Amino acid sequence: MNTELALLKFIKYYIKHNPDENGQNYNADQANLVETFGYSLVEKVLPKTFEDNIVENKMKLKSKRIKDDYVRIPLTPIQILHFKLLYNIAYLNRLYPDKINDLNLSEDLSELLDDENKILNLYNEIKKIGLN
Image (tube, rainbow, N blue to C red; front, side):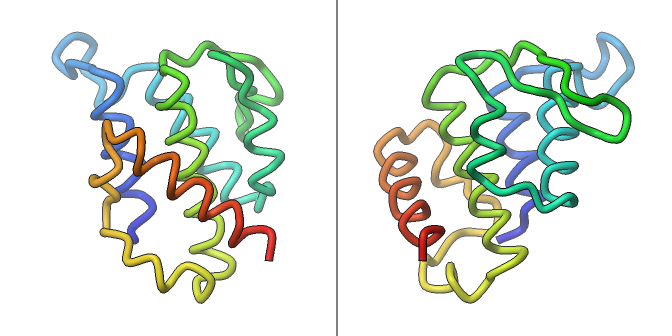
């Protein structure tokens, strides 16, 4: 699995943005998700802590630039679960890759996009792996 590719696929799929509107590759919502995800992964924030920082449609933005500001995230509950799942997988992949080798995940995890059952099932499976 390629974490960067999976994260970019996720944000571009769920949060629409036309780069021609502001000349930027990403809008503020996309940037907030990527920035917090990346910072958390670099700082080795535990998945439980990462998940606790997302409440309903708000997320605690953490980065070198911003500490503990809450920002709105324009995602549905299942999309938020998908985002949390991505972080869990990326965390395990980075620190304990042998724990997820048997899952046969694609490089960009595109099979999860808009598939609520796959997201729920894989999330539950990943949570079990993370507990061991």
